[in-house]
Image (cartoon, rainbow, N blue to C red; front, top):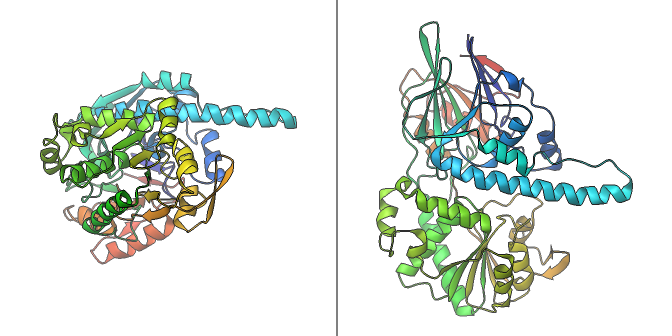
Length: 466
Protein backbone atom coordinates (compact mmCIF):
# COMPACT_ATOMS: atom_id res chain seq x y z
CA UNK A 1 0.00 0.00 0.00
CA UNK A 2 1.20 3.54 -0.80
CA UNK A 3 2.97 5.38 2.00
CA UNK A 4 3.74 9.05 2.65
CA UNK A 5 6.59 10.10 4.95
CA UNK A 6 7.07 13.67 6.21
CA UNK A 7 10.72 14.71 5.89
CA UNK A 8 10.47 18.49 6.21
CA UNK A 9 8.39 21.58 7.04
CA UNK A 10 7.00 19.77 10.08
CA UNK A 11 8.57 21.83 12.89
CA UNK A 12 8.62 25.09 10.89
CA UNK A 13 8.26 26.58 7.43
CA UNK A 14 11.47 25.47 5.71
CA UNK A 15 13.00 22.28 4.37
CA UNK A 16 9.83 20.99 2.69
CA UNK A 17 10.14 17.34 1.64
CA UNK A 18 7.57 14.53 1.42
CA UNK A 19 8.36 11.03 0.16
CA UNK A 20 5.60 8.98 -1.50
CA UNK A 21 6.30 5.26 -1.96
CA UNK A 22 4.12 2.75 -3.80
CA UNK A 23 4.62 -0.87 -4.77
CA UNK A 24 6.26 0.19 -8.04
CA UNK A 25 7.40 3.82 -7.66
CA UNK A 26 8.88 6.43 -5.34
CA UNK A 27 8.56 10.17 -5.81
CA UNK A 28 9.82 13.12 -3.78
CA UNK A 29 7.39 15.99 -3.38
CA UNK A 30 9.47 19.15 -2.66
CA UNK A 31 13.17 19.31 -1.81
CA UNK A 32 13.61 22.51 0.16
CA UNK A 33 16.45 24.21 2.00
CA UNK A 34 16.35 24.66 5.73
CA UNK A 35 16.63 28.37 6.46
CA UNK A 36 16.93 30.47 9.60
CA UNK A 37 19.29 29.70 12.47
CA UNK A 38 22.80 28.30 12.03
CA UNK A 39 21.54 25.02 13.50
CA UNK A 40 18.77 24.82 10.91
CA UNK A 41 21.08 25.61 8.02
CA UNK A 42 23.54 22.90 9.10
CA UNK A 43 20.79 20.35 8.28
CA UNK A 44 21.30 21.15 4.60
CA UNK A 45 24.76 19.57 4.66
CA UNK A 46 23.78 16.13 5.98
CA UNK A 47 22.81 13.19 3.77
CA UNK A 48 19.19 12.84 2.75
CA UNK A 49 17.23 10.56 5.12
CA UNK A 50 16.14 8.27 2.27
CA UNK A 51 17.76 6.39 -0.59
CA UNK A 52 17.86 8.92 -3.43
CA UNK A 53 18.68 6.18 -5.95
CA UNK A 54 15.19 4.73 -5.46
CA UNK A 55 13.46 7.99 -6.40
CA UNK A 56 11.79 7.89 -9.81
CA UNK A 57 10.69 11.54 -10.00
CA UNK A 58 10.75 14.82 -8.09
CA UNK A 59 7.76 17.19 -8.07
CA UNK A 60 8.02 20.85 -7.01
CA UNK A 61 5.15 23.22 -6.15
CA UNK A 62 6.98 26.54 -6.72
CA UNK A 63 10.39 28.18 -6.94
CA UNK A 64 11.07 29.43 -3.40
CA UNK A 65 14.21 27.88 -1.92
CA UNK A 66 12.47 26.50 1.17
CA UNK A 67 10.67 24.21 -1.30
CA UNK A 68 13.37 23.66 -3.94
CA UNK A 69 16.77 24.70 -2.61
CA UNK A 70 18.28 21.23 -2.12
CA UNK A 71 17.48 19.91 -5.61
CA UNK A 72 21.03 20.67 -6.89
CA UNK A 73 22.41 18.74 -3.90
CA UNK A 74 20.06 15.85 -4.72
CA UNK A 75 21.45 15.76 -8.28
CA UNK A 76 25.04 16.16 -7.05
CA UNK A 77 24.50 13.20 -4.70
CA UNK A 78 23.40 10.97 -7.57
CA UNK A 79 19.75 11.59 -8.50
CA UNK A 80 19.40 11.23 -12.25
CA UNK A 81 15.64 11.51 -12.94
CA UNK A 82 13.29 14.30 -13.95
CA UNK A 83 12.19 17.21 -11.77
CA UNK A 84 8.65 18.33 -12.65
CA UNK A 85 7.26 21.85 -12.15
CA UNK A 86 5.38 24.55 -14.07
CA UNK A 87 7.12 26.38 -16.91
CA UNK A 88 7.41 29.65 -14.98
CA UNK A 89 8.85 27.82 -11.97
CA UNK A 90 11.54 26.30 -14.19
CA UNK A 91 12.60 29.77 -15.38
CA UNK A 92 12.63 31.23 -11.88
CA UNK A 93 14.57 28.24 -10.53
CA UNK A 94 17.47 28.88 -12.88
CA UNK A 95 17.77 32.38 -11.37
CA UNK A 96 17.29 31.35 -7.73
CA UNK A 97 19.49 28.25 -7.80
CA UNK A 98 22.37 30.03 -9.53
CA UNK A 99 22.16 32.82 -6.97
CA UNK A 100 22.09 30.29 -4.11
CA UNK A 101 25.13 28.49 -5.48
CA UNK A 102 27.01 31.76 -5.89
CA UNK A 103 26.29 32.76 -2.29
CA UNK A 104 27.31 29.34 -0.97
CA UNK A 105 30.58 29.37 -2.91
CA UNK A 106 31.39 32.88 -1.70
CA UNK A 107 30.51 32.10 1.93
CA UNK A 108 32.61 28.93 1.84
CA UNK A 109 35.55 30.87 0.37
CA UNK A 110 35.44 33.48 3.14
CA UNK A 111 34.99 30.85 5.85
CA UNK A 112 37.93 28.82 4.51
CA UNK A 113 40.21 31.88 4.64
CA UNK A 114 39.39 32.16 8.32
CA UNK A 115 39.84 28.42 8.85
CA UNK A 116 43.24 28.38 7.16
CA UNK A 117 44.46 31.06 9.54
CA UNK A 118 43.12 29.02 12.47
CA UNK A 119 44.60 25.75 11.17
CA UNK A 120 41.15 24.19 10.73
CA UNK A 121 39.87 21.87 8.03
CA UNK A 122 38.18 23.63 5.11
CA UNK A 123 34.45 23.31 4.37
CA UNK A 124 32.61 22.74 1.08
CA UNK A 125 29.50 24.59 -0.13
CA UNK A 126 26.25 22.63 -0.09
CA UNK A 127 26.44 22.72 -3.88
CA UNK A 128 28.27 24.65 -6.56
CA UNK A 129 27.42 26.40 -9.81
CA UNK A 130 28.53 23.26 -11.66
CA UNK A 131 25.95 21.25 -9.67
CA UNK A 132 23.24 23.77 -10.59
CA UNK A 133 24.11 23.61 -14.28
CA UNK A 134 23.78 19.82 -14.12
CA UNK A 135 20.49 20.03 -12.19
CA UNK A 136 19.00 22.39 -14.79
CA UNK A 137 19.19 19.58 -17.35
CA UNK A 138 16.65 17.62 -15.28
CA UNK A 139 14.01 20.36 -14.94
CA UNK A 140 10.81 19.65 -16.90
CA UNK A 141 8.15 22.34 -17.27
CA UNK A 142 4.49 21.30 -17.32
CA UNK A 143 1.42 23.50 -18.05
CA UNK A 144 -1.29 24.06 -15.48
CA UNK A 145 -4.19 21.63 -15.68
CA UNK A 146 -2.41 18.84 -17.58
CA UNK A 147 -2.44 15.40 -15.97
CA UNK A 148 0.93 13.73 -16.56
CA UNK A 149 2.38 10.37 -15.52
CA UNK A 150 5.67 11.06 -13.73
CA UNK A 151 6.33 7.51 -12.49
CA UNK A 152 4.68 4.13 -12.90
CA UNK A 153 1.18 4.44 -11.43
CA UNK A 154 1.61 8.09 -10.32
CA UNK A 155 0.25 11.09 -12.19
CA UNK A 156 0.56 14.78 -11.33
CA UNK A 157 -1.55 17.81 -12.17
CA UNK A 158 -0.57 21.40 -11.27
CA UNK A 159 -3.25 23.94 -10.32
CA UNK A 160 -2.62 27.68 -9.88
CA UNK A 161 -1.84 28.51 -6.23
CA UNK A 162 -1.56 32.30 -6.73
CA UNK A 163 1.45 32.57 -4.38
CA UNK A 164 4.23 33.62 -6.75
CA UNK A 165 4.53 33.29 -10.51
CA UNK A 166 4.31 29.61 -11.45
CA UNK A 167 3.24 28.46 -7.99
CA UNK A 168 0.99 25.45 -7.87
CA UNK A 169 -1.30 23.30 -5.83
CA UNK A 170 -0.17 19.75 -6.57
CA UNK A 171 -2.66 16.97 -7.30
CA UNK A 172 -1.17 13.48 -7.18
CA UNK A 173 -3.13 10.50 -8.50
CA UNK A 174 -1.82 7.18 -7.18
CA UNK A 175 -2.99 3.98 -8.85
CA UNK A 176 -2.42 0.61 -7.20
CA UNK A 177 -4.11 -2.68 -7.94
CA UNK A 178 -6.85 -1.04 -9.96
CA UNK A 179 -7.71 1.57 -7.32
CA UNK A 180 -6.92 5.27 -7.44
CA UNK A 181 -6.13 7.46 -4.44
CA UNK A 182 -5.72 11.21 -4.68
CA UNK A 183 -3.37 13.34 -2.61
CA UNK A 184 -3.55 17.14 -2.75
CA UNK A 185 -0.69 19.31 -1.52
CA UNK A 186 -1.67 22.97 -1.18
CA UNK A 187 1.89 24.19 -1.73
CA UNK A 188 1.99 27.79 -0.52
CA UNK A 189 -1.46 29.27 -1.13
CA UNK A 190 -1.56 32.86 -2.30
CA UNK A 191 -3.17 35.85 -0.66
CA UNK A 192 -6.31 36.64 -2.67
CA UNK A 193 -5.80 40.36 -1.93
CA UNK A 194 -2.31 40.45 -3.46
CA UNK A 195 -1.56 42.06 -6.81
CA UNK A 196 -0.98 40.54 -10.27
CA UNK A 197 -1.65 36.84 -9.71
CA UNK A 198 -4.92 34.96 -9.77
CA UNK A 199 -6.62 33.59 -6.67
CA UNK A 200 -5.78 29.99 -5.73
CA UNK A 201 -7.80 27.48 -7.73
CA UNK A 202 -10.59 25.61 -5.97
CA UNK A 203 -10.28 21.85 -5.54
CA UNK A 204 -13.21 19.86 -4.23
CA UNK A 205 -12.12 16.27 -3.76
CA UNK A 206 -9.19 14.31 -2.36
CA UNK A 207 -8.41 11.37 -0.12
CA UNK A 208 -5.50 13.05 1.66
CA UNK A 209 -4.79 16.79 1.94
CA UNK A 210 -1.55 18.48 3.03
CA UNK A 211 -2.30 22.10 3.95
CA UNK A 212 0.26 24.84 4.58
CA UNK A 213 -0.31 26.84 7.78
CA UNK A 214 2.17 29.73 7.58
CA UNK A 215 -0.43 32.25 8.75
CA UNK A 216 -2.74 29.76 10.42
CA UNK A 217 -2.85 31.89 13.56
CA UNK A 218 -3.80 35.28 12.12
CA UNK A 219 -5.25 37.41 9.34
CA UNK A 220 -3.43 40.09 7.41
CA UNK A 221 -4.11 43.78 7.70
CA UNK A 222 -6.66 44.96 5.11
CA UNK A 223 -4.90 45.61 1.81
CA UNK A 224 -6.80 48.88 1.23
CA UNK A 225 -5.40 50.27 4.49
CA UNK A 226 -1.89 49.13 3.56
CA UNK A 227 -2.05 50.72 0.10
CA UNK A 228 -3.36 54.00 1.54
CA UNK A 229 -0.47 54.06 4.00
CA UNK A 230 1.96 53.23 1.19
CA UNK A 231 0.63 56.15 -0.86
CA UNK A 232 0.88 58.51 2.12
CA UNK A 233 4.51 57.46 2.73
CA UNK A 234 5.46 58.07 -0.91
CA UNK A 235 3.82 61.51 -0.93
CA UNK A 236 5.29 62.52 2.44
CA UNK A 237 8.76 61.39 1.44
CA UNK A 238 8.52 63.33 -1.81
CA UNK A 239 7.77 66.50 0.13
CA UNK A 240 10.71 65.95 2.50
CA UNK A 241 13.13 65.71 -0.42
CA UNK A 242 14.95 62.58 0.68
CA UNK A 243 15.46 59.23 -0.99
CA UNK A 244 13.17 56.27 -0.32
CA UNK A 245 14.76 52.86 0.22
CA UNK A 246 12.61 49.73 -0.15
CA UNK A 247 14.33 46.47 0.85
CA UNK A 248 12.45 43.80 -1.08
CA UNK A 249 12.51 40.10 -1.89
CA UNK A 250 13.47 39.45 -5.51
CA UNK A 251 10.59 37.16 -6.50
CA UNK A 252 7.01 38.21 -5.90
CA UNK A 253 7.26 41.15 -3.53
CA UNK A 254 9.42 43.28 -5.86
CA UNK A 255 7.02 42.86 -8.79
CA UNK A 256 4.06 43.66 -6.55
CA UNK A 257 5.73 46.87 -5.30
CA UNK A 258 6.56 47.91 -8.88
CA UNK A 259 2.90 47.39 -9.82
CA UNK A 260 1.63 49.52 -6.93
CA UNK A 261 4.16 52.26 -7.71
CA UNK A 262 2.98 52.10 -11.32
CA UNK A 263 -0.57 52.58 -10.16
CA UNK A 264 0.46 55.69 -8.22
CA UNK A 265 2.37 56.95 -11.26
CA UNK A 266 -0.67 56.48 -13.51
CA UNK A 267 -2.68 58.51 -10.98
CA UNK A 268 -0.09 61.32 -11.07
CA UNK A 269 1.12 60.70 -7.51
CA UNK A 270 4.76 59.77 -8.17
CA UNK A 271 6.88 62.91 -8.20
CA UNK A 272 10.27 61.22 -7.82
CA UNK A 273 12.74 61.58 -10.65
CA UNK A 274 13.20 57.84 -10.97
CA UNK A 275 12.50 54.45 -9.41
CA UNK A 276 15.58 52.22 -9.46
CA UNK A 277 15.44 48.44 -9.27
CA UNK A 278 18.92 47.67 -7.99
CA UNK A 279 19.09 43.89 -7.88
CA UNK A 280 20.26 41.69 -10.77
CA UNK A 281 18.21 38.78 -9.43
CA UNK A 282 15.04 40.89 -9.04
CA UNK A 283 15.55 42.31 -12.55
CA UNK A 284 15.85 38.80 -13.98
CA UNK A 285 12.76 37.67 -12.06
CA UNK A 286 10.80 40.72 -13.26
CA UNK A 287 11.67 39.84 -16.85
CA UNK A 288 10.28 36.33 -16.24
CA UNK A 289 7.10 37.96 -14.94
CA UNK A 290 6.93 39.94 -18.21
CA UNK A 291 7.09 36.72 -20.22
CA UNK A 292 4.30 35.06 -18.23
CA UNK A 293 1.77 37.89 -18.06
CA UNK A 294 -0.92 35.49 -19.19
CA UNK A 295 -0.80 34.22 -15.58
CA UNK A 296 -1.93 37.63 -14.20
CA UNK A 297 -5.46 38.23 -13.01
CA UNK A 298 -7.89 40.02 -15.33
CA UNK A 299 -8.20 43.24 -13.30
CA UNK A 300 -4.48 43.92 -12.98
CA UNK A 301 -3.84 42.86 -16.58
CA UNK A 302 -6.36 45.52 -17.64
CA UNK A 303 -4.52 48.10 -15.54
CA UNK A 304 -1.18 47.19 -17.12
CA UNK A 305 -2.63 47.76 -20.58
CA UNK A 306 -2.62 51.47 -19.75
CA UNK A 307 1.15 51.22 -20.21
CA UNK A 308 2.71 51.48 -23.65
CA UNK A 309 3.26 47.75 -24.04
CA UNK A 310 1.31 46.28 -21.16
CA UNK A 311 4.39 45.42 -19.07
CA UNK A 312 5.30 46.36 -15.52
CA UNK A 313 8.14 48.47 -16.93
CA UNK A 314 5.89 50.50 -19.23
CA UNK A 315 3.27 50.87 -16.46
CA UNK A 316 5.97 52.64 -14.42
CA UNK A 317 7.95 54.59 -17.08
CA UNK A 318 10.31 56.10 -14.50
CA UNK A 319 11.57 52.60 -13.60
CA UNK A 320 15.30 52.13 -14.21
CA UNK A 321 17.31 48.91 -13.95
CA UNK A 322 20.69 48.99 -12.20
CA UNK A 323 22.38 45.82 -13.41
CA UNK A 324 26.07 46.44 -12.84
CA UNK A 325 28.04 47.22 -9.69
CA UNK A 326 29.02 50.56 -11.21
CA UNK A 327 25.38 51.50 -11.84
CA UNK A 328 24.53 50.53 -8.26
CA UNK A 329 27.37 52.62 -6.84
CA UNK A 330 26.25 55.60 -8.91
CA UNK A 331 22.94 55.62 -7.02
CA UNK A 332 24.81 56.56 -3.85
CA UNK A 333 25.55 59.96 -5.41
CA UNK A 334 21.83 60.78 -5.65
CA UNK A 335 21.03 63.08 -2.76
CA UNK A 336 17.24 63.15 -3.06
CA UNK A 337 14.22 62.32 -5.19
CA UNK A 338 14.92 58.62 -5.86
CA UNK A 339 13.05 55.48 -4.91
CA UNK A 340 15.50 52.58 -4.66
CA UNK A 341 14.24 49.00 -4.49
CA UNK A 342 17.04 46.57 -3.63
CA UNK A 343 17.70 43.21 -2.02
CA UNK A 344 17.93 41.62 0.32
CA UNK A 345 14.46 41.89 1.76
CA UNK A 346 15.71 41.61 5.35
CA UNK A 347 18.73 43.92 4.80
CA UNK A 348 21.13 41.11 5.69
CA UNK A 349 22.89 41.00 2.33
CA UNK A 350 22.86 42.41 -1.17
CA UNK A 351 23.00 45.98 -2.43
CA UNK A 352 20.49 47.43 0.05
CA UNK A 353 23.26 47.49 2.68
CA UNK A 354 25.26 50.07 0.73
CA UNK A 355 22.20 52.25 0.20
CA UNK A 356 21.47 52.11 3.92
CA UNK A 357 25.06 53.15 4.60
CA UNK A 358 24.64 56.24 2.40
CA UNK A 359 21.10 57.20 3.44
CA UNK A 360 20.22 55.86 6.88
CA UNK A 361 21.93 58.74 8.71
CA UNK A 362 20.00 61.39 6.75
CA UNK A 363 16.91 62.79 8.48
CA UNK A 364 15.12 63.37 5.14
CA UNK A 365 15.51 59.75 4.00
CA UNK A 366 12.82 57.10 4.37
CA UNK A 367 13.07 53.30 4.63
CA UNK A 368 9.91 51.35 3.80
CA UNK A 369 9.80 47.78 5.16
CA UNK A 370 7.40 45.73 3.01
CA UNK A 371 8.18 42.16 4.07
CA UNK A 372 8.65 39.87 7.04
CA UNK A 373 11.81 40.56 9.06
CA UNK A 374 13.23 37.57 10.93
CA UNK A 375 14.67 37.94 14.41
CA UNK A 376 18.33 38.96 14.37
CA UNK A 377 18.30 40.53 10.92
CA UNK A 378 19.19 44.21 10.32
CA UNK A 379 15.69 44.76 8.97
CA UNK A 380 14.20 43.50 12.21
CA UNK A 381 16.48 45.84 14.17
CA UNK A 382 15.14 48.79 12.17
CA UNK A 383 11.54 47.68 12.77
CA UNK A 384 12.27 47.36 16.49
CA UNK A 385 13.54 50.95 16.70
CA UNK A 386 17.35 50.63 16.60
CA UNK A 387 19.11 53.99 16.91
CA UNK A 388 22.29 52.69 15.26
CA UNK A 389 22.83 49.89 12.77
CA UNK A 390 25.98 47.99 11.87
CA UNK A 391 26.19 48.23 8.08
CA UNK A 392 29.12 47.04 5.94
CA UNK A 393 31.48 47.24 8.91
CA UNK A 394 30.34 50.66 10.15
CA UNK A 395 27.94 51.80 12.87
CA UNK A 396 25.43 54.07 11.13
CA UNK A 397 23.09 56.39 13.06
CA UNK A 398 19.43 55.79 12.23
CA UNK A 399 18.08 59.26 11.45
CA UNK A 400 15.87 58.23 8.51
CA UNK A 401 12.16 57.62 9.06
CA UNK A 402 11.39 53.89 9.21
CA UNK A 403 7.98 52.75 7.94
CA UNK A 404 6.64 49.23 8.41
CA UNK A 405 3.85 48.03 6.13
CA UNK A 406 2.35 44.81 7.47
CA UNK A 407 -0.38 44.16 4.92
CA UNK A 408 1.72 42.84 2.05
CA UNK A 409 1.88 39.05 2.05
CA UNK A 410 2.11 36.35 -0.60
CA UNK A 411 0.54 33.80 1.78
CA UNK A 412 -3.11 33.12 2.48
CA UNK A 413 -4.33 34.34 5.85
CA UNK A 414 -6.07 32.15 8.42
CA UNK A 415 -9.51 33.11 7.07
CA UNK A 416 -8.42 32.48 3.48
CA UNK A 417 -6.94 29.07 4.37
CA UNK A 418 -10.20 28.03 6.03
CA UNK A 419 -12.29 29.34 3.11
CA UNK A 420 -10.14 27.39 0.64
CA UNK A 421 -10.22 24.12 2.56
CA UNK A 422 -13.97 24.38 3.12
CA UNK A 423 -14.48 24.06 -0.65
CA UNK A 424 -13.66 20.34 -0.34
CA UNK A 425 -16.75 18.18 -0.44
CA UNK A 426 -17.73 15.82 2.34
CA UNK A 427 -16.66 13.33 3.40
CA UNK A 428 -13.59 15.45 4.10
CA UNK A 429 -10.16 14.18 3.08
CA UNK A 430 -7.71 13.25 5.80
CA UNK A 431 -6.08 16.57 6.63
CA UNK A 432 -2.45 17.17 7.67
CA UNK A 433 -1.10 20.60 8.61
CA UNK A 434 2.44 21.35 7.41
CA UNK A 435 4.67 24.35 6.69
CA UNK A 436 3.91 26.40 9.79
CA UNK A 437 5.35 27.25 13.17
CA UNK A 438 3.91 25.18 16.00
CA UNK A 439 1.64 27.93 17.30
CA UNK A 440 0.26 28.65 13.82
CA UNK A 441 -0.59 24.99 13.30
CA UNK A 442 -2.18 24.62 16.73
CA UNK A 443 -4.37 27.69 16.27
CA UNK A 444 -5.42 26.64 12.76
CA UNK A 445 -6.13 23.13 14.06
CA UNK A 446 -8.51 24.56 16.65
CA UNK A 447 -10.23 26.89 14.17
CA UNK A 448 -10.71 24.10 11.64
CA UNK A 449 -12.38 21.95 14.30
CA UNK A 450 -15.16 24.57 14.46
CA UNK A 451 -15.76 23.90 10.76
CA UNK A 452 -16.05 20.14 11.13
CA UNK A 453 -12.44 19.25 10.30
CA UNK A 454 -10.27 16.85 12.26
CA UNK A 455 -6.75 17.91 11.36
CA UNK A 456 -3.51 16.07 12.09
CA UNK A 457 -0.13 17.66 12.87
CA UNK A 458 2.60 15.26 11.68
CA UNK A 459 6.11 14.95 13.11
CA UNK A 460 9.41 14.65 11.22
CA UNK A 461 9.85 11.12 9.91
CA UNK A 462 6.23 10.15 10.54
CA UNK A 463 4.64 7.90 7.91
CA UNK A 464 1.00 7.43 6.96
CA UNK A 465 -0.64 4.93 4.63
CA UNK A 466 -2.57 6.28 1.68
